[in-house]
Amino acid sequence: MKKYAFALAALSAAGLAPAQEVVRIGHVAAMTGPVAHFGKDSENGVRMAIEALNARGATIGGRKVKWELAAEDDGGDPKQATAAAQKLADARVNGVIGHETSGTTIPASKIYYDAGIPQITASSTNPKYTLQGFNTAFRVVANDIQLGRALGRYAVKSMAAKRVAVIDDRTAYGQGLVTEFVNGLRQQGVNVVAKEFTNDKATDFSAILTRIRASNPDLVFFGGMNAVAGPMLRQMKQLGLNVKMMGGDGICSDEMHKLSGGTMADGQVVCAEAGGVEAAGKAGMDNFRAAYRKRFGIDVQIIAPYSYDATLILAEAMNKAGSSAPAKYLPELAKIHYKGVTGNIAFDPHGDIRDGTITLYTFKGGHRTQIAVTK
Image (tube, rainbow, N blue to C red):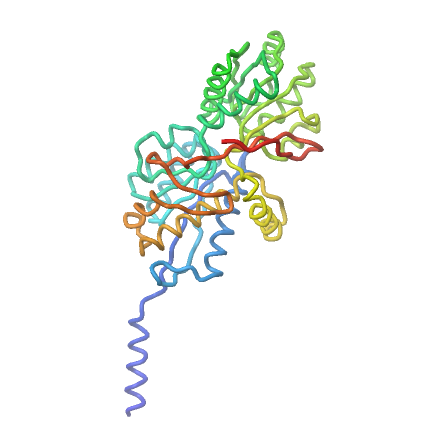
């Protein structure tokens, strides 16, 4: 009888034992569409971070938790992005990494703000994102003001550009980048000789490239993604517009060679990544890239190291606060100082990364080759 009573007591105690806490990290990017290769790269970085947290038994306030990924596809479309954001808000995820593009990140950010859910983008660079006054919005890469002006300086000082044509894809990312690049040119005493625009689904650029060719530029700057820049580069060659192309992180992956149909010449394209590591961080980045290849069987595009760090920053803020509740860990996130794969990360009052780096690349043999790291 005593054994039976003891067994009942044990079962009762087990039934009252609290279930393991589950922390869900949302991620949203394009899993479909022309920029899906970047979106998958971003998701892979978050997945690696969550796997690392579970493998080491990462705790929150001393309590062991289970970390989960809640992934959504926004297709690179603003309307789809807000629907995905609302889905994550309704599911009460503990934090969000994303979105991938500025055009999706900015509209989605209002939904996360209204829900009180912290959001870290690992790739969106339009300054408007962090200038809306949302205390839930953070960014772990440099913004377009830093990126565009650094490219403007480099175009004039290192590439000796004097006659520059610009094209943007009418997205929040493309327009923002071109605006700041032009500001960078003007600071160096250079004005644009032609300004054209396209859209992020376009495939025929003959009309705008013909007009640009008539302005006799020595450099074409494109604000947009490589899914458009690659075919544009091929058509530039067909029209005899054999000048260099420059752009931001949207064109800064090895996909450019394939998307240009193999027409991209060595050194023809110069691009900048809103991030990158200085010499002291190279070994850590190399190790991450090797681990990524081992895990997924492919190379890093651009975003994965930043989405990886962004996820671990959320976990660190939760641990410091002793809670995964957004309202409780948000103050810790705002004042975080974290040393990650991508360098030292801290946020300014707007949520932008402090002292963000810019890395300049060109392409040789179809692969990115680093030129310089600057701030």
